Image (tube, rainbow, N blue to C red):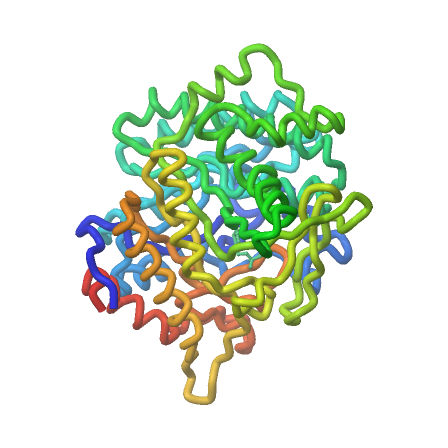
Length: 472
Ligand code: BGP
């Protein structure tokens, strides 16, 4: 049982353009880095891509009608930058803007608050080719121009905005693991690209204040709170290192406009620290967020990692339990399984208490409101002979995490809303269509590629949670 959710709590669900829209080259859209990357051999699970995805682009009305039936109060989606600027900048593509007019107007007509993400990883390929995307400061102007175009179009209709989605996770994959485009493995370039992304984030937040009065904006951060494997001082130090290098590096830069001290000192020693030009930190401090978007899936447990030890490893993209290797930075930390927690088939620790801890840590360190912009369970859902999807495991997961939200609010956290990942089943970047998160099943097996929508048991459950204001 849970209660005490505020009456204006944003009961939501989330998605991202590349994962749902399809229509990858329709109506003047330019290619994104993902349109190109997914077609290179061996990059994604069984070569899956978002060319069609779940065809949301052509089924907006049907999908929003389902959201309304469910009683959603908020829907988080992202705008595809190359749909608006096919070359990243220059001529605006009016047909691209018109698609988001339709989506936003339809949400508003159904009383659903739009939560608009400006960037969910689908960088225009043109900017990657021209100057290397996030590795060049020219992207700051181009990103600002794109964002201001959206501010001008949608201010007055959209109150809640997300600047960058999971810069930490995306750029870790892109520049350390080599698993997202441009698939580089170079820590110096990793920290350099992140620094530029921080500057771009601050610049568009500054511009937001002028263009969207009364609106709220913040980044969505993939927060996996660190735990120590034991109370041995060496594990405690590994945990401190991990929290600084894998979380506070981003959070302090966003919210305080500075980098955490021990991590910065270490990177200066290794020669991997980003180049900080005069004026950079001032810009970061002028562009701090109104709230923090929290994408929470799991906690990570850390232990000592001597020099010469474990390095960064590719993540689990198969759903074969127990196949995820330890990952770490020699001399700083490495991950280790937490014996107290169950995991999903993708080895993600299921830890609702970790969510309460996450919310408390963020709220007390930064003193900002928070919004859960993603939380959910990816599994191999199956359509059963009765034509239904009985995802009781997802209901249990979401229920326990909503309870953790309620407890965090009792601990004093200001929580604006909760967007479950995801509304319909969608493409998982590296795991293809087999890893499903939705309240609505998308049938990919039916003859003729119908992509028929089928409400899962969790749809009806969340519908009743929302209807009762969380008192179910
Ligand atoms: C986050 C992303 C989402 C989504 C989710 C689930 O990192 O912001 O876009 O994909 O994780 O991840 P996955 O699809 O890898 O299970």
